[in-house]
Length: 128
Picture 1 (cartoon, rainbow, N blue to C red):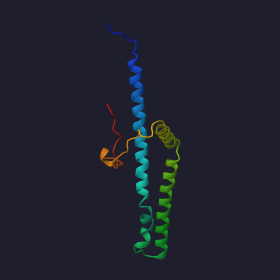
Picture 2: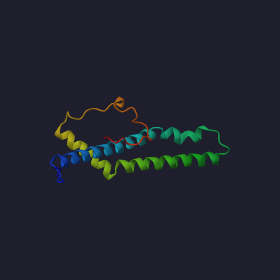
Picture 3: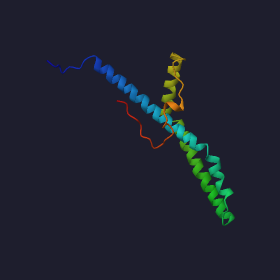
Picture 4: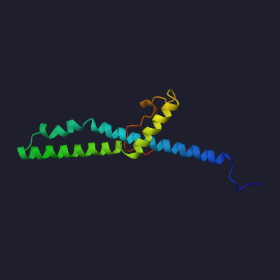
């Protein structure tokens, strides 16, 4: 006869599943930060591009340059905000606590572990 009462194994499974979802969310967030950082590596060349192209007038060159500086400043501000967000701080606090508990327990990540890590359009994979 089936019982409608939850067993002891069920809460543990739910807890493990919630933990795994939290870790997946944290990895997704860190991946988004990394993609923003990679984009910022090309900020200076993109910012200076209007100075390297022929412009119809000095005013047009100055306007294009200021527009590129403004967009780069916004990107940098967005990255800075994301880096200082409470979610990011919570992730780093968790990492530091885990590393203190088991300093050799964190396996180093390699790009070959996830061949699609740099794809910003990839949807987060759900584990089953």
